[in-house]
Image (cartoon, helix red, strand yellow):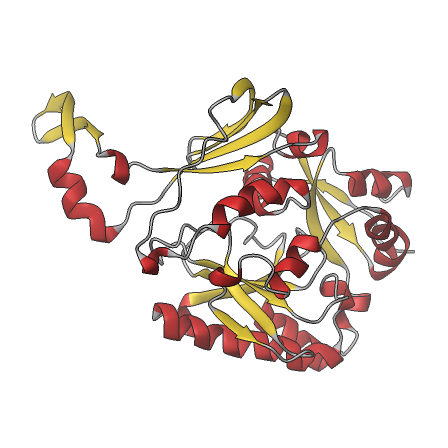
Length: 341
């Protein structure tokens, strides 16, 4: 008899991680709008501006799905040409190289003065006051619900649970991976790839995550996507995948050191479980940046994964794993139906 538990998680933390991770967790149509913008981008190093877009000219707001004052992010449901859309607004981080201009060229309006303490409202020049905007259009009901405030639960999944509940659920869902294959086949975002190892067994591509605006390294976020297909998640990994995992870790760290001058000791390298999409990919973020989904309830350090597989080739086929699910997640419903509460 396996132990059973379904524990309420810290709602604010889980929701924040889920909401922000969902920005790049969409598939199919939802990614087309986001990637259309990025298809124009060559990265900050080429100094070129992206073409202006008019997609929001006819946007009509229906409701605010959720927001976070701490993370400076808002999720909005509305209509574009009578079709549902989700707009995600996020304040961009400050950049050290623009501080002089920001402080000297902005307008200060005094709000409060008390002895040595002065409070102002700073009006920055438009080009220093950007808002990162993600548009999911046309959006399905699933996209809209994904960004609504939801209670979250921490699920305990045994190896048997994975085989009898999770895997059948995954296989029945229409999770599109075409956008991943487009990247691997250079049909989309080829100019965004910063490193590639073409080996069919151990190779991968490394490119910026859509959540990173590439204007500073403090919130560096890159994704390594395996060229090898058919590996859905941690659960599929065994000792035969060690060469692939070690290659991603070493060459990914080397590429980031060469391109961004960040040593391995400054990087957090991990996998998600459950992942946002079921094709093996690894997250590279700067240590100190609270990236979405980097908490212990979801992130697994790649170095630990490698060590676990060296100790036990079938470690992730048998290990009990925990992960958060939102109240409206279909997989959570399957765990309830199986009385895994």
